[in-house]
Amino acid sequence: MFEEVQTTLSEDIKATIATLQSAGKTVMVTGTDEKVLALIAVADEVRESSREVVRKLHDLGIKKTVMLTGDNKGTAQCHRETCGCE
Image (tube, rainbow, N blue to C red):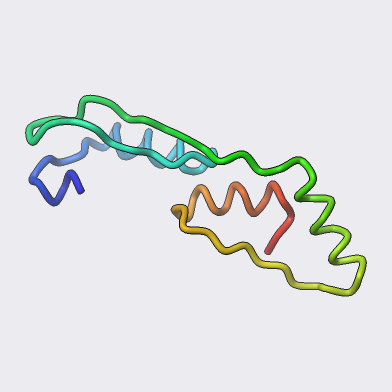
């Protein structure tokens, strides 16, 4: 969105966003037309029981489990690994 309003994200900000996303966070960028003022990172918590539930499904013969999400790829990858989905 910032790039749509002619505010270019610096390489440092892009790297920070990528790092936060790969840690399972969704990043919101706030600012003005001229500059970024803040990054806000939030995350959904994966339930502690998720990995065990997926393992039990596999034990029952369900060999392929997938996770559907509206999150970005980095966040989805982090959650997928946490819960044991493909």
